Image 1 (cartoon, rainbow, N blue to C red):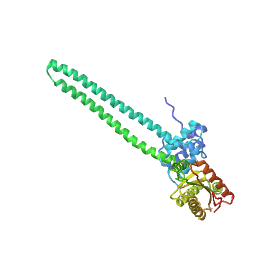
Image 2: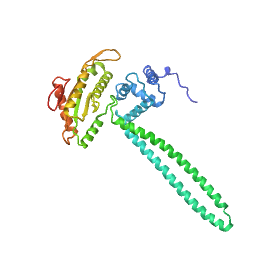
Image 3: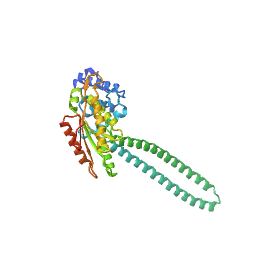
Image 4: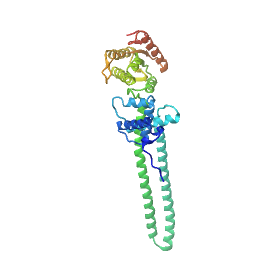
Length: 355
């Protein structure tokens, strides 16, 4: 006879203690707040987040829900996959979306191959049956002087073949729909792989690709490296959520001032701009962004507390013919640190002049 489960409050502390019951409630509150179904996968994700609030998974969710945005089921599925892979690897890890989609593509190609092989087999069998039936029909016609058997056999074989072809058509149509969904997902993943999720700007990989394309086209672009001044102090005083908003503000300011050029988030509080014009044009555009940012008075949205003036320093270097990005970036980075050492909120270029 099955034993009846005792009430939760009668369970030992290791299973039903106050802390455990509080965690159950927090998990439920988390799922309710995000309007998510209480599925095992969602419970597992909520548990991972709530038991490790300082972990990368919790930080990712905090970033995605900044400003009161709810997580979608797709977000939770992606984050849940990240948690599973991280647990399997014994460390925090970002899911490789392109890798997963590539696996799906391979699986789909295998499915296409199976359908084509089956169609080929059906066609071959159809031909063999027709040949065998024709031989039998010819013998019957000679022996009995009747063609009725021929008509019946052809009808039977043709009907069977039509059924097989229709089945294959349905399978191919399903595969076509799946292929279209996969194509869209691959395009999205390709875009994700080249963009920064926080600012929406192109990321470091996109910047490197763009430089290589310009180099292949025989152009000599300028590279600007911009770094937010005293950014650690902003994070320490106001928290990472506010720091992320500051980075978005700097990103938007740079993008607005350099609409015809590639503005990328290179990493952390560092941005890079790829200019197709000459050094003077690059300096002028960056100076517009620098001055605009320096005039702004940012505040914390929730408390209206004044963050104050946020500035950035910049180093700009022009590339030479067939020069690698690493060489140009190293010069621009050295100029950036010279601008920092000279007092910040300024621009240093190849000419070692400051603005």
